[in-house]
Length: 366
Image 1 (tube, rainbow, N blue to C red):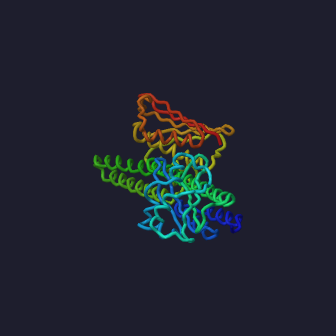
Image 2 (cartoon, one colour):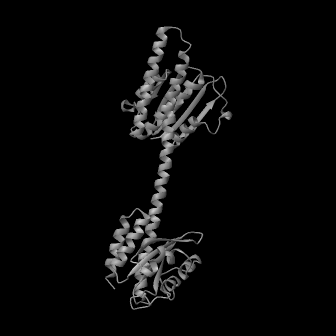
């Protein structure tokens, strides 16, 4: 047997770099056969329903590969049955392989005929994936040290399958989170600006003064340009437009864009990390949009207070207010503000009543 440690090292290095499950399977059995005295190998995956699938193979005997690998793809066998019965826990000798017997039936058996194989379960903890089968010419019994080597390789393969699957799951989770983040960003910025354009354009239809109409359409053009800038920022994953000059400047600029007068005050020394500042800006932006759309007032107040490591943010208006018990679960704006507050480890609270205005209170540590 070729140096076992060298074989294990080469296989481990190969497996460590692989990110695709099926390419990994094909590559590892190629390495195994090319660096040992075995002549062929094939891998079968077995799902939770007990159905098996030929995943990879290397240097199969012509008899076993005949009819598009029919002997390996169809029917059952001892090793698959043992695997399905949870009785295959380590590398084992297969005394009589029904697949090889069928392939060799009515054929001349010579010294080069593969009649027996070793089978290795591919496991990782409680996860069970399938089996690795290895065969050699004129070999009926695989010694203990050979089975130990194959078992070590099988364990490496099983662990690699698990790693790849976990990585893929993590990627899928990140994709879902990114989609949700983009949905929030679109709702918080571009969608709100488009809404502002819509109501401004609708109001313009009632204007009779040429000067007022011109001012209105200039505002529509300004907001449209800002919306396009925000969309570009989303595409290039930039921080929200305006924050380059600080939160206060960004809020004042945005309030001007949506034609809302904002009274802003700060108590204490302003110190907010960039990541928190971006989230806080979006929360304030959403709150101002809600005032613009629903409060029936053109004025809002923002007060930020710093006390040691704690920050208190209060956003209020003297608008028409609403019954907080009537908030619908699908209200995207309030949901976004709450999620963003929780993302920075803060507490979000909203109080309002009909004809009494609305107040949003946010607190977090820095």
